[in-house]
Amino acid sequence: MRNPRIILAALLVILLMAGTAFAGRDHQFRGKVDGHTRGALLFKAFAEGLNPESMDMILDEEPDETGRVRHLFLDLYGCELGGVRIERLEIEAFDTDFTDPCSWESSGPDVEEMLFVNARATILEKDVNRAISDAVFGDEDGNWHNLFLDFRKNGVYASGYYTVRLLFKLDILIELEGRFGIVGGKQVWLEDYTMKVNRVDLPEVLTDRAISQIQPIIDLNEFVFPLTLKTVIQEEDRVILESRNEPERFNGIRYLYCSE
Image 1 (cartoon, one colour):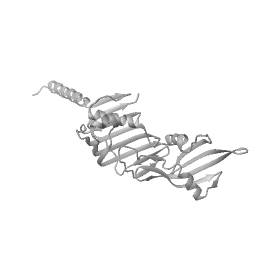
Image 2 (cartoon, rainbow, N blue to C red):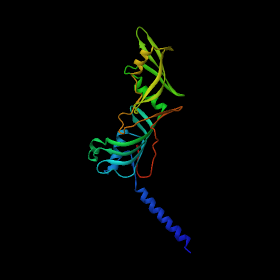
Image 3 (cartoon, helix red, strand yellow):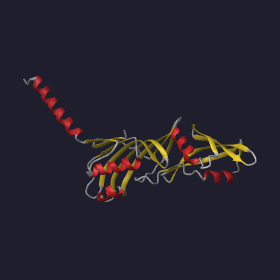
């Protein structure tokens, strides 16, 4: 009969060896991404280009000499796209052909061809509020103030005061209601909107002219992956943008980054 203690000891040794092997497939960075392998250079480009607070990348294997990656998963927190902070961005890409790895250190990788990509982006109400305050309704002469945005059931409400200075100072209340919609798979626009000035409906032609100045609300066209978003899910304090299929993480070579 085999000695149970010997069997247990052997299992512990195997587990320890396996743990060491798996740990060797993890690459962790804090504040700055170093390294000159193709995987590290790809990870560094994402960290520097998207400036996330933290990021997790999984590869089924290192990029080959042509820049091809068979299976990739990205999970980013607190990155910025299209002038808006993204609370969480998840990407799963298949059979991605990046540009020649020799150019990654100088100009960064670009996608030349890809089989398909799944994506999910979560954007908080407070971050859309901040973006509107900073850029969308804001202006250089400081005429806008008390800007406010509120996610509501199946829609969004925004308001703000615009100060007119003629012979006297006058604050005009501007109110906007609408819903978020996806245009071209890469942009979030305000749709089915109405606008009021001092509680009075603004004519459609003037509303369209005003809204055109702030569209799109979010623009992901500059993102390295060719996303095709399909669905907008709106909750009380956030909006979630999803592709047809949800991204899924898998076991593989893992790179982790934290900004602090």
